[in-house]
Length: 228
Image (cartoon, rainbow, N blue to C red; front, top):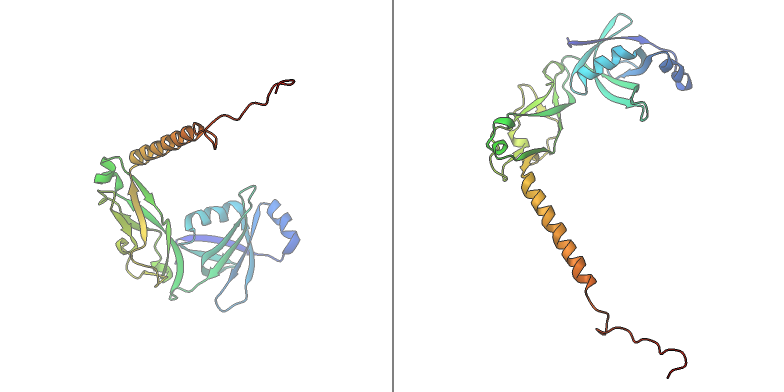
């Protein structure tokens, strides 16, 4: 069973009436998948927000609806762009023996002890998460990547360096094993390069301002009135 539990109530309200439901401190949701039709549900805002914060898109939840238990994963969350509050949640029903796809965050560990960190280099993570597939009980909360071996600016951490837990596979078989997950850079060198570029641009602008007109001389002055 999933460790994260969430109690939901069935709902009849839909459409424009959902605004009143949200004002009452509840979040509308829907459960789809499995052998049944989509089920409209709702939950107290604080309860569903807490469960989603723990589960994210990578852990299963044990949903309780009208006394019945249903294993599910989060498939979509809608957030109000102004208030940043939950406005709707979609759950996908799954079974314990079903291989499903989920998103797992990639967590870099050990960079603090690396030679690169001692040289004051900075790590740049270009992949924050990855799609994996596994049975619900095997879905990882995170994929840990070892960043302790970074030493030079040429070092990179790729998909091939990720160690997946037992029973877990990459969902995208076409994902290149050479795709970069993280690399490092020298902030001091980049700052120096930017300063050099800015200095060169400033010098170029100064040189351009000193360039004479097309014929290399000042334009002739018009003769004063009354003079030839």
